[in-house]
Image (cartoon, rainbow, N blue to C red; front, side):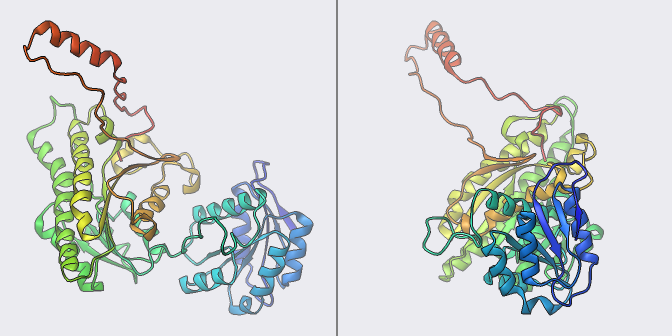
Length: 448
């Protein structure tokens, strides 16, 4: 048995890694061992030809939080039930990972008590996040598997949160949109990815991703996205309106064409896409097929608080936030939820943020991958009663924006006396909360 410690010297969690039975392929096991060590875990690598009793025994000896088994053949199937039983009795979580594991395997193994399962396309951030959760559960005294049937704890969500849902995502070729596509597919969705950049878009096409190169700020382009979903899958369950663009400049410097362009991409594009999808959902509801659909729009902290030197962009994103509230009201009768997100992430629109501090997305709080799980949650079954909200997501936190709210009123003077008007206005200003400071490139919540 060899032990690999974090180069920083801290212990984020203790992990046993090895293969099981006659599975002799060590490349994946060694790669995971090194990756976990880089992220601060202390890893004991047991090599090949392990048994469930041996792995569980090592976990007890090393006081391990997690036993991880690297899988590259179907050998594991004969051993997994015994492994889960022994490790859980020892108070240790069980993780299986390997290129042969599919989404169907993930579901089946979760049903057999495995605490986390990773296939060929799992990212380092995904794996590290799951290990962190399992370590935290064990150290908090939780038993494995999770809460027993009949407990008051919320049931663990289906790992395929978006199983077979059809999701259209605009602005999907790169940045946030691409992160949304990756996460939605990981969670079981079929995705229609849209962008105006056909070449870049082609790079994400696959078995569960079809692409549509079109401009959704035109009626033809918006209709094409909805039509593509219906033609390829026969349904449309969710839309993420994410396409964006920027024309920077102060109010006195931007031209009329810049105003038209930015408002066109953000406001008209969001409106037309919602309109095209909404017509389909209304028709479904009219045929007694009320959809459990979701629309997520993209506003920005710039639209909520203003951003210095970005008056047009701020105005466009403020319009999207207001539109989302109205759309939530109108679309509720069709069974559709509508929420806005104000993401904080490093994209082409936020190049002023500079390069990431870490090469691994898990270590970069501004990587778009950290926003994607929350956006996808809004598309899933747990969010069916959540609508008309704006969520600020990114840079290490998530919150709900409170929005404009009326303050304590004063009665208007019937005589329009300037002195009374002056007194009323002074009282209102004196007791009001100070306005939120305008955002600048030095503040942590820029437009995304």
